[in-house]
Length: 182
Image (tube, rainbow, N blue to C red; front, side, top):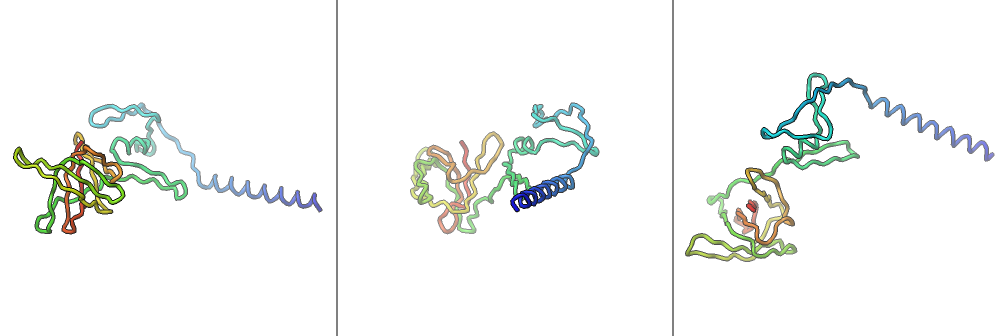
């Protein structure tokens, strides 16, 4: 009886392995690609790649990680769903005085991460200095770091004391958009 059980388990195991092999073969395809010492330039600067680009069906294929880095788009890979996601810059519209919004510019003097508030120092001109405390940051705030004509999104947790910020404050007295220039 024990010997029959072992043989049965072995047959089941072989069945599962062969099924996986068949599925793997069904989801694969052998292709012919051409390597032609393809050079990649970003803003007129040649970029060296770890994996060489290739031609397939008259199209150039380059690694997606390189593309995301060159375009400054964060990338994520979901192995369970077999999906690649490139995240583009999420921006916000300018303040609208007609919508009871205002724009505030200053330096962050303190942050309260638990209450999601900032305290800033505004230097409007040589004669006007203004401090604004406990400015509430909305949960869905869009924060953009701008440096050398490049922009990326940040989260509230990325802010630090000393950052120079421009903030759009909505009619509910919450920051809905922020530009960090540091």
